[in-house]
Each structure stands twice: as C-alpha cells, then as structure tokens.
Length: 339
Image 1: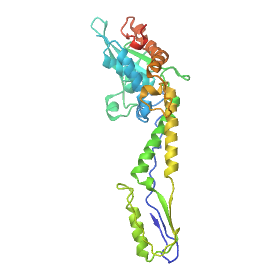
Image 2: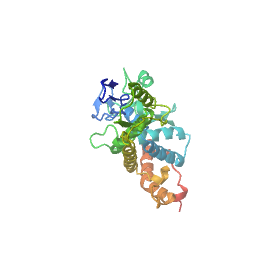
Image 3: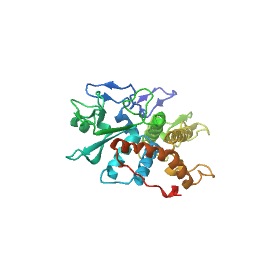
Image 4: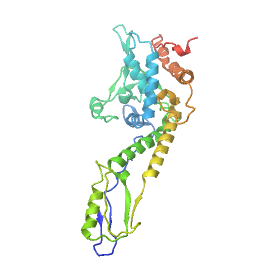
C-alpha cells in the first residue's frame, strides 16, 4: 500500500503491507441444554473443548499428566483394558463427561467394558437413554450430528460427569474458568509467530530530514527496506548521504522492547491461571522456576498432589464398581504413598 506525493521538498510516506489478525473466534458456546428431537445437546461445545485442549501447552500437559498418572496406577483386567480406561479418563478430564459401555455375553452377564467416545455420545431425552451420533457426523467432524442417531441398548451406558450449577444432564469440566486464559496464551503465541513471520519484529520508522540527491535514491532506499520483510530478516542496510547532518536520519523502533515485555507477561500470567485451575504443581510439569529458591521438592509436591487431587479422582472413577455391583476398577498404591 502506498500513499505518496511527488513534489519536491514534500514528505513521502509509505507503509509495508497490512497486519495479520491473530486468532479471534469463540469456540465455546455456553447456551444451555436443549433438545434436538432424540437427545440433548451439551451446554458447551465438545468440539470447542477438544480444540481448546491444544490451545495452551500447560492446559494440555496438566490433563495428560493426570491421565497418565491414573492410567499408571490402574490395574487392568479382562473386563476393562488399560486402553479403554485411558480413553474414558481422557474424556472425563477434558469434557467433564465420560461414557463407558457395558458389553454383555449371551447370558446377559458382563463380558467387558468399552470406552464410548464422549465426543459423539449424547444423553437421550427419555431418561436412561443414550445415543451415538450418526456416522456421517463423526466422519465430517460435524459433532452435533445430522439425521437420526443410533440409540445404545438401554442400561448399557454409564455416564460419569462433573456437576454443573445450572443443569444435571451433562457435566462441565472443572477447568472452565481458565479457558479464557488458555485462549489468551494461544493468542499471544500466534500473534508472536505472525509477528516474526511477517517481519514486523524488524519494524521501525526511518525518519529522514536531509534531502537526498535524487528521487532514485529514495526509491532505492524504499526498495531495500521492503526487501527486509519476511525470510532473510535482519539484513544490514547502508545509507550514504554526503553532507548529511548527524541527526538528519533517525531509526525509531516502534514495538520491539514493549512487545517483548508484554508477550512474556501475558504468557506468564495466563500460564499461572491455567495451572491454578488444574491444581497441578509447576515442578511436576517441567516448568523452570524464575527465582533462585525454585518450587521445592518434586517428590513432596507429588505426594500432596496425589492426596488432594488424584485420590478424589480415583474415588469418582470407582463409582463404576457401584454401577456394576462388582469390583472392576482398581488402583495400585503408589510407592511415594506406601506406609
């Protein structure tokens, strides 16, 4: 884009491209539970929650850390494999809802349990019914379905959900309050990437008061500055202006220092919000302390984290045993808690 005046002794102003917008879309739609004909749609988009998992490194890491720890302590059996358990736990931690399907033998006795993906499972309008979204919806990633959903056999689906204050059909994840911070963290990272890819980090105002000899000199200088954008940034530029004054040309940086400080502050604050929502000690996620004192002993932090966070999760997961009226879900005692 260019806006210039060709008359002599008049200032010439030109700009280099337009800024690219950072991510600016809402992926959570908290509109309440409503009926679609066969089933209720969840109050929060499961698609949005799944995308949000990858929005912030600390958000994903905290959920995966809990899943890995629970999967490590879990005792697999012929009824429930480690794979199905891990998928069920991942859904529960990510969506606030986990679904598991009971598969019976010919005698209608329990044969095994299978993970029913929360992304495509919906609670039916009729009490006790559950539906699987149609295949074309799952393939196309239109997560709230087209056409008629397939109903699970009555009594074969267990739903484990986090409580919500406004309805009792679906659960909501306990980290919900930190999603805005996770998105802010993602937006800061995306903006910073585009900031570098666009060459904007080399942005400045070249302020010249000394007259150059010919218009061709101005055109050549403008061309060289434009070429500094994109790949090959930070190239050197020589300006030769015979007879110029000391301050006849000034290079004024517009954003580098301020942008760097703001970026680090946003990343740090949003990270702390996310970790507070997940209640995971930072030393367990490999975060490097910014002070000499550090975060303290990782082993001690692990013991406290296990007692206050993992043990309550284990108690919730053991409710599967109450539903089946037999012990299928069992966990080891970790070595740091023995004795």
